[in-house]
Length: 167
Image (cartoon, rainbow, N blue to C red):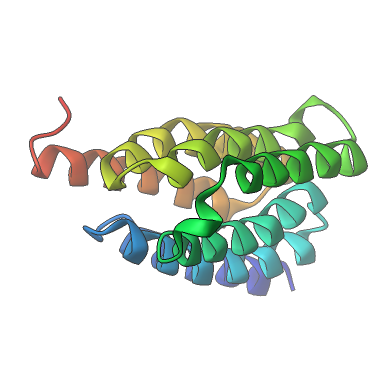
């Protein structure tokens, strides 16, 4: 069963690699919704509930951001605050120790540039968030997550360098 759980994690990872090679914010987010759905299953099967809950909200968050970018009435900062409050409430609910907060801290950091930023800002922020996830994945022993975070960080750096926007 553990190997099957890791295979699910690797599938989510492959989709996230594809996401960060996209040029448009909408395309990055749509790929990430699919990746997060698969990752939700991965973390649930691992019993890593902070990661699981974070992915569940990330699916709603990224879907909402794609919709709000088409409908300016939904662009209110009120919705951003609601998502942040949901993350805070869930962090209290799933808290077991400091490391269990890392996925939720990463999600709160990530939501602001995804809400307002372009694909470059999203990618740069994702580097730091992937580092927090890396620590969490080591903690929950997600081999797929560890490898995915390291390679995703490298992939984002390559994508940014390829466009001469970083380093």
